[in-house]
Amino acid sequence: MLRFIMAITVLATITGCSGMTYHTDIDNGVLSQEIGTYVNKRDLQQFYSDQEAHESGATLLGRIEGESCDGDGMGSNNVSYNRSKSNAIDLLKADAMRRGGNAFTINSCSETSVSYCDLSVLCTGQAYDY
Image (cartoon, rainbow, N blue to C red; front, side, top):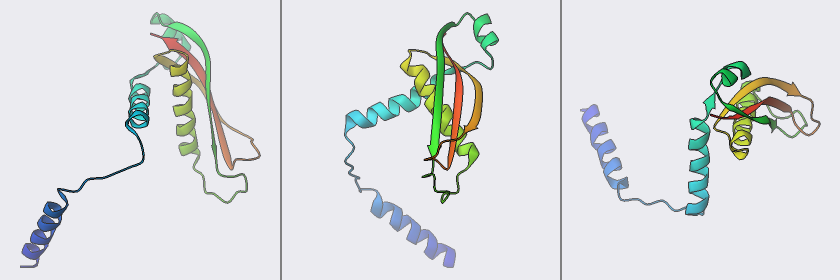
């Protein structure tokens, strides 16, 4: 009997919320740009080495980098290295896209010392047109 009452309650809640609309202060231009950037980053080809990129016929566009800065430099934030590295790689991909590339390599990622960050990670690589 309790399961029946719970099922009816959940069903009523879902049905009652089906006509809801949501409003935000983000305009369509900003939203479409953010979605486009996210999709484009996911579509980038990653080569695992510069040699692999060269052998595939990709054209080198130049050196790229992405640096994340997490925390306020006061040591008060518990910052994950993996999260900072992921953010730095996202910024590296954005740099490749700014150069007109559709492929990239990651040559290195390492922690850097920046006084106003609890954790800073710098990733470097190469942008390619493939």
